[in-house]
View 1 (cartoon, one colour):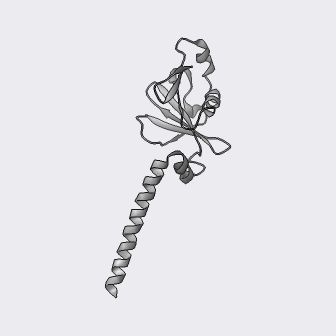
View 2: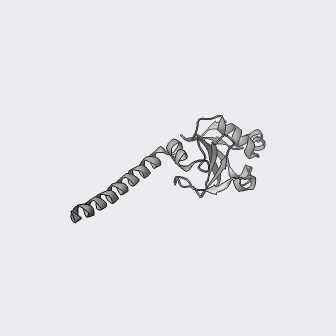
View 3: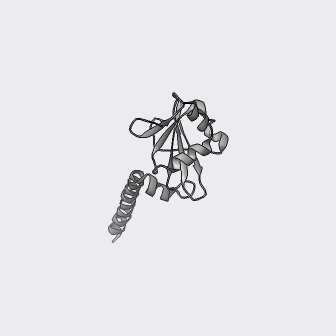
Length: 141
């Protein structure tokens, strides 16, 4: 397996028919991705694999990273496979919690920076709302 740029492994057929044959099934890709740490991308050339929706992945959203689309597949244990589609390849990794299982837990464990941002916005909004209510109550006294 040739090493990719800093964030993923390139599993394509460059120089090897073995890799071409091996990665024609999403099941094998998922097996290999699950052997890696969470969020570690594996890069798969689109020319060697069917579209993710053809094998049960659902269209989803994800943090913008230049992708065309995102797809997800929830595993029986609550983890999820996340596929990001680019022009000529897919980037595949696993998440600790699939969003369909629990969006809040997914954000806490797989996207904590977004979770903290949302908590901050919620806190500021609640503070502003409470401040407005208390201000009106104080004017009545």
